[in-house]
Length: 428
Ligand code: SDX
Image (tube, rainbow, N blue to C red):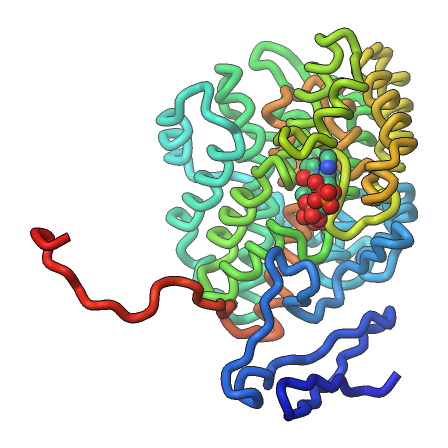
């Protein structure tokens, strides 16, 4: 293949360079397009064919169902690494030595407290507020309590902002849950690991010790790894574009949390459980819901199915499905919802509509079943997704800032009214 693309508009032919990635993905570099063609631009709703950046963090192959973080396969990382190690890998590009990981965690622990006035903000929310809205607000509020983390330009200042949010975010997640449950807001311990602290802060009752269950620790560790990054998805692109205005890391993450909340994105894990519950209540009539999902007049979609990039099995869904069987078995939890999910998957994989559109289970299809078995309320499922995605968002923001990417500002094709005169109100 030549290293240029030719574009003919009218009688003129234009040439643009091709960019090739390390996994042989090819893109047409159209930086010069508008200037060279006297104003012609491209248009691509949902950016289905548009690359926003060059990135060295995560590689996806949607046709093969491949997912790698910094070149390591998701299967190996889920099996052999722990979440904090994967967070370090995503953010700094290499697997850490023991010394590097110990220092990273010590720096995080130094920051794993939040200003007590944050509790006043939490108190102001109604108990039934959706946790994603609370979490997005609290993350943005951190900016007010940590002004030195806003205008960061040096790698050193970025590192300080990164360990701050890696320390404080799990506290905000736990406090968001405890607020809903009317429980006192407390802290973990420097004696515990990163995931152990998350479980302890979420579940420890004020009048009791909390017995850390290795099955819960391993299950959460694996789920967080599987959610840690996914290249330029909706919420990561949001973090990048907000960060490109130099709004600061916490404000960018707050925007990313809001984007993830949507049921077409991270909010799907909550929607999947609600859908499976409805099917179970409906006597397990999966055929009815398959019919609704295929009916163009019906807005219902099979939640947890389909993906913008994966036109094969989402490799994370395969790992989570296997883990669901193991975790429920180990915890001694019988959940009929798992059988409903497996029945629905079997049907969809044999249904021509889904086969033709290459719709497979995605990361959200089975994850909620494990969260529920762990005692996490359904409205907290997307918060758990955000907890896992935090290091990926951080890594993508850091890469964008270190590469000094320009502010994100897409163009448009105007299809509104042409110039017209103002008419006084009594003449309209
Ligand atoms: C995540 O991008 C990422 O990487 C995201 C994520 C990450 O880690 O960050 O992987 C996390 O968001 C996973 C996706 C979670 N969302 C859901 O499970 C919601 C249900 N899925 C869909 O809404 C949909 O599949 C999307 C949003 C995920 C993808 O939509 P696309 O790529 O825009 O595809 P599309 O809407 O153009 O659909 C193509 C066709 C359409 O039918 P036709 O018009 O061709 O006849 O497939 C149909 C759609 O109607 N379709 C579905 C469907 N998903 C697509 N039909 C029924 N049920 C579905 N779930």
